[in-house]
Length: 344
Image 1 (spheres, rainbow, N blue to C red):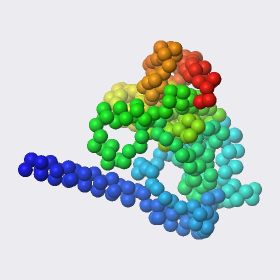
Image 2: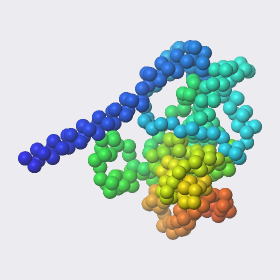
Image 3: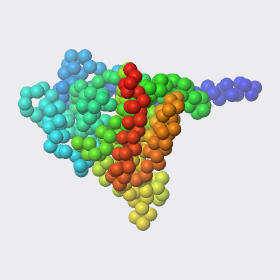
């Protein structure tokens, strides 16, 4: 009787999880409805873009798999941005048909796209290897280069397996299924270079607010690729929004998983300065990853540099010299070890 009860309970819980997941998927991942809505606006002349013809007329572009059920985030350009250069890049993609003129539908589409974190980051990092290339757009739908990639840690498992797998076993599997150490070193350098790119870049500073393994991957050359950029946000807009957030404790002042500030208890508002810079969060993600299997002649120094990095506090602007020193030391240490190998 006991076994029958637990079998029934397992079936019930499993069915409920499947139902919840399927419901949220079907509610938010309606590719056919999205295409109809976009193409209706395109045919009415409300929007335009370089991918509209392929999506709505030729049928060579279609919406296949839905990768996320999370809502979109808005983004704008930070105060330190080089607006002239950004305007040049924006105008270059806005003129979808390359006729030398910006039509109102093209302008509508580009303005909608500039509200999306992922699109904005891809636009300002187009010349960098970390970000997939922009291929086209239609309204607020944009097309990115498909990048075959492997997860940073472990293997991808069906969500139903993830639900029932013990955390300890999952962590062990993550450690088993990782590349060789020289490859991990190259991937780690890629993440450190991304931190450099988004800090005081040409178009302002961005904050990395979810530096989890799921946000990154690597290609067959072991180059790091950003797979989810929704939580890499312009610093100026983060600060503007977080100031408006009411709080009772520091724990209330968080965006994403990793951007935390403190609570001003006199005003019950969140302060704008993050408690940890991007580099500290990146090193936290890399610590176990790159130390496991590290050669004995670099392990001690690597561990020392990583722990100094993880303990960085305050904004990067407040500790710019220390920030740059640790970043350069880590990159140099890793490159020195793999520069003579084919992995570099």
